[in-house]
Image 1 (spheres, rainbow over the protein chains, first blue to last red):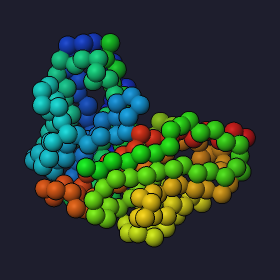
Image 2 (tube, rainbow over the protein chains, first blue to last red):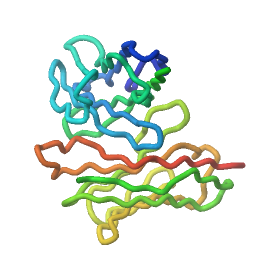
Image 3 (cartoon, rainbow over the protein chains, first blue to last red):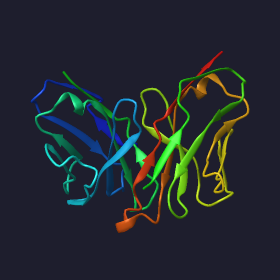
Length: 113
Length: 117
């Protein structure tokens, strides 16, 4: 059973460009969580999604950030008009249930130049 | 709110040395406590967990005991190996989070451990 997959693993964007981060959950998991790790910080919750629904986006910045988890395909975290402060590691986790164990992907390291 | 404070790294040890990584937390009620490990180039893996006071989580020679009186969950291993080199994260999940957000994990900043042969 493959683990949580994230791609790309490394992404470099210039200021003002868009970044799209993809997360494929483990087979059978319909709950996806995104966390962000800024330099010198711990992972911080961003958003919780189930198939086709955003359950909790309280940790997402109000502007430029959006997330989706369509019926088919991976979950996408989208950052529009990136700024240097968006440089971070973005981790996706999936679980089989709302309060189940969360299994993490390897992360996408976004660098904004 | 919930918060986790863990020992600043990096920690460098020789093989077979004793390891302690301190972790303390702030939370209302009775959170579940976790240690995650991240090996180079990989995702976070759950190392061990404890769900109530005085529980001891253990795995791969690592142990941590849930101490409610000191709000701590220190990670220990009696004899580290080179293969234990990784980043270790302490985390909590609070089933009493308001609004039912009991799925959120709150993490410490991580501690980089390097074990030299």
